[in-house]
Length: 285
Image: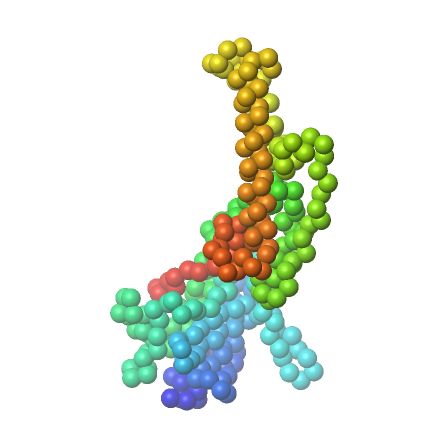
């Protein structure tokens, strides 16, 4: 089946602005109007749908686009729609999904449920999933993950927002390492313990109010600096801060270092990568 034959399986609808067969692959792209009662329609946005049968798998994608006229032609710029209160969902298929095209029946088959759809029915499914905010909870989780990363970098005296652009560039290009923060001079106190000042600050921020309000619950003698238990606890806290600082700094440096690609992905990189894995299962009804 060639691209034109595949395209003819789709019956053009009234909401479709244009449909174009692919030249080198079996498939087509579809420019479709948004429903008239949506703000996207009033803003002249378009839905850009691709459906194709590739050598390796069945492919589809849906994106919001903004049409721009250039002389006699019109180009479509992909938009994420974040400026709208009611979000849309841009998405594309991956090889893990159990959706294939059966060339015999000429239908799209969802293998897990043993369901099949015509191309028109499948395009409607794609459009419905695009119009729904399928990543609402994922965005909330991404915000939480981003906050956790900022805190972890802050505890190691680094700034996540400052290095994020270079991290993205490095992880997408796999060529140049991002620029690292300059080494900071260690103050005299820290010659005894290698401690991130921010980790120590965070510990003291919790310890002092706890000592004031919960000191009367201390069960190991008088709660004062002359008590050996208090002195021992103080140095144990310093030791734990030192170990935490060294461990966290090592994990962040592994995340930066190119050589770490050959090692097991550490938890900071897992948190970072999680923000970019926006997967969900298509709602078929």
